[in-house]
Amino acid sequence: MQDKITLVLDYLNEVKTRCTYNAAAKALGITPQALKKLLGERRPEISWLVSVGTGEPTGYTDNEKHPELYRTKRIIKSAEVLTRNLHL
Image (cartoon, rainbow, N blue to C red):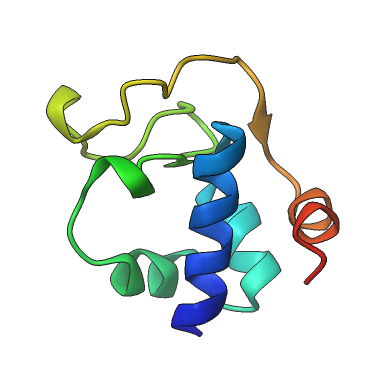
């Protein structure tokens, strides 16, 4: 599972695009809560995963957010889109 999570995070960091926890979790076949636990400590590389309601990484300080987090307004909200882009 950790390999798949790394694949998702590497992709989001490469395209510098936010993705909802729900879409990422569904694409991985786990719950959003399980995903949050598996991610570990807050850090810029995982701040691309955001809340569907706010478009923000939950509970992150400005220092914990990736410097290019707001480069685009686009947010991946669909597990199908994420899965297609990752070729999972």
